[in-house]
Image (cartoon, rainbow, N blue to C red; front, side, top):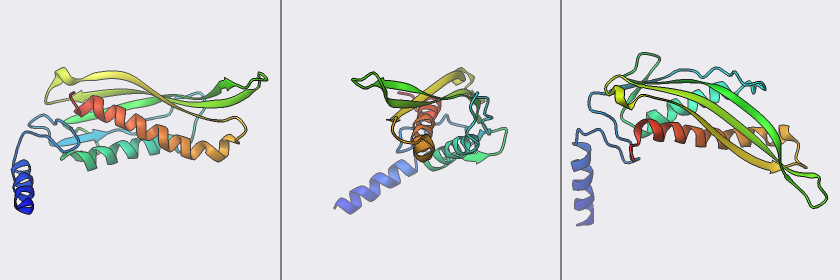
Length: 165
């Protein structure tokens, strides 16, 4: 009985043409493609892998969580932008007034164009950060911090672009 109910549920939702996915994405009817431009890095400090990682992870998120086809350019939905900040700063002091924690912050500016529903267009800045122990060498934690921050930034852009709640 459970198998029949689950099969019926899947069949029902896979035959719907409303543009919804199980991730909560709401794709406007008529939108079939999305293009994600490579984000150039205009931050004063440049991580040479960040531009490609951010752009690729965004493309992968849209490809895996929506029915949209990712194209190189001219998508029905278009995401573009730039990396505007990549900063490390002290974020906490110890009881002896020495830096105990540092913070890596990545900031991006995003433009979203919805050619199917232009009222959904936006331009917005997103910023995320991660703290790490000041006793750690930044180069030894940088890659992991960047991966975590990029994942959150991608989620922010995805949610703002196609999740309407």
